[in-house]
Each structure stands twice: as C-alpha cells, then as structure tokens.
Image (cartoon, rainbow, N blue to C red; front, side):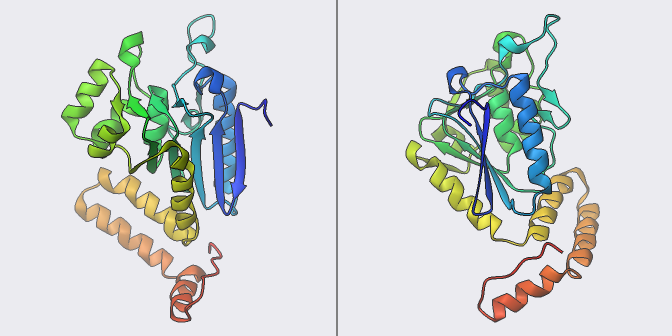
Length: 257
C-alpha cells in the first residue's frame, strides 16, 4: 500500500481517497490520474459508498496540479482521463464528494477541489490557479467553475495574476466551506461525510443532479425538472421508509430503490 500513488479506505460508508505523492507535492502524473479514474468509477457503482473524501498525503500540499515532468516527448498532456483531469474534473458524480484540503491546492489541484461539492481547508492551506505563470490554461474546470463560485472580479484577479490566496481569504469569498486547524481537517471532513452518507442515496443523487442542471435552465424549466424528479422519488421504497422511520423514531433502513 505504501508504494501506491493513490490510497483508499472505506470507513463508515465513506471512501477516503488519498493522493499519495507527498514527495512530489501530490502532483498528478498519468498513472495517478488513471488510478483516480478507476477508483472513482468503482465508487460510483459501489452501494457501500455513501460519500467520498479526496485528500492528499502529508501536510504540505493537497495537490500541486499536473506533474510537469510527466508530459510525453511531444509535450502532450497525459493526465486527462474519460472523466477529466485526475478522473474527476469532468465527472458529474452521483456520490457527494468532499475535498479535505490538507495543504496547498494550486493549478490542477484547485481544479480538483472545485470539482468537489464541499471543501474543508487546513488553516495553512492556500489556493490558486497558477497556469498563466507557466504558459498553460486552467481548462480542467478552473476558468469555468471559479467565477461561478466566487465573485467574478476576484476570480479574474486570481486567474490573471496566478497568485495564491490564504484559506481564510478563501473562506471569506465563499471558495471553501470550513477552515480548521491542520490536525482537524480529516475529522471535520469525516463528520460531514458521515452525516451525508447517512442520508437517502436516491435523494442525494437527485439533489446533486438538480444542483448541476438547474443553473443551466430557465426558472420554469428547472422547476419542471424538479417536479419530474419528485414524481419519481415519491414512488420509491426509500420515500416510504424515510417518513415511517421518522414517525417511529428510528434510523431509516435505506434500500436505494
């Protein structure tokens, strides 16, 4: 396990995925990207996985982006998988994903974080899209997602200067959900993940789907889509089990159907 570039652990319905290249600031090379792709593909199909946490090894970097030494002899990027950079940036995951930013998330590392639903950051973490400093572009979601998450002018400054911001500043502008001491990052991420994983799987999947498609629709179309989702979910076994468990003051037994 120690030699693997990506480590996994399934704990209490939560799949912890750790980018394990601390000596390379957890940068993504082709093998790491392929491993992430396969791990997340399996997680999507595994009913035991209710939530996913993505983090990095060590306490220096969450992920420093692409391993610049991993380009082929023609200078071609080798880290884009079926579901994007590190198998996540073009993935519409049915499972909620939490980024536990144990350190700096820069360039593709921030793009991975932006692809997650929730970000928990260590107090010493920093965030930025530094592609302009090396002649690249943040085209794995960074230039698309960042202006939707934080004010456009702040996003423009980050993208055009390539400078990094602190975890506290990231919290102030709405980029991250929580800032905690470094030794509490995984505890906070697990607390959130366990709460999420205890919820109804179909409700989680459809909530994420609505979140994804609604901003691309008119208010009327988005409401019609919500109505169709409701028509579907109210006929599921879980929609019967949930209210019954609530009235009987017990934990629901979700079936995912």
